[in-house]
Amino acid sequence: MIRIILVNKNDKEIGTEEKLKAHKEGKLHRSFSIFVFNKKGELLLQKRAKSKYHSPGLWSNTCCSHPRPGRDLEDEAKRRLKEEMGIVECDLKEVFGFTYNLKVGDLIEHEFDHVFLGTFEGNPKPNLKEAEDWKWINKKELKKDIKENPGKYTAWFKIILDKVLKYGKHQ
Image 1 (cartoon, rainbow, N blue to C red):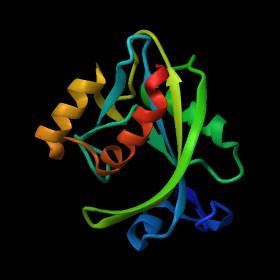
Image 2 (spheres, rainbow, N blue to C red):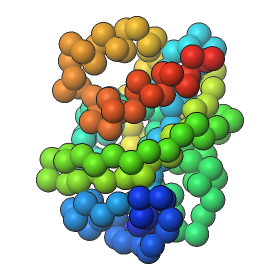
Image 3 (tube, rainbow, N blue to C red):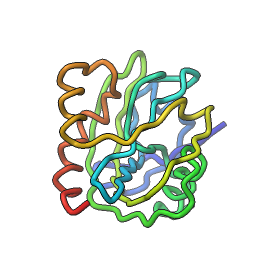
């Protein structure tokens, strides 16, 4: 049973909860989202595995997850980036945090999300239980495709993307 960190609106820890229960009940919890760019400014997307319990088969940011209780947030982000996408060497920098509340199927994503940016050159080696595909995409092409095909992308990714691109201009 995976436990996640429950937080208040200021991201102060208030307890833990079983992950699926927290999502069913819409309890505010801590998460992180990672956006990895290459030197050309392209963003690395992952296509979520069809076996995922929500948003299967949809394109999303490079990696996202929940830190385990009692662990360092940045260490957890690096751990999941390695586990999901096989990326070992990637300096991550937290650029902002925000709260969102979305209905995703019969679940509720109510998260205080810590957003990290990183740079990586090469090809990831994704864990197929997590990500069934990946691609590098330039920002203009991505924004056009989201506008034309919004159903291909996860709900949270569409919310976060514009904020990330403002921070990612240096990429």
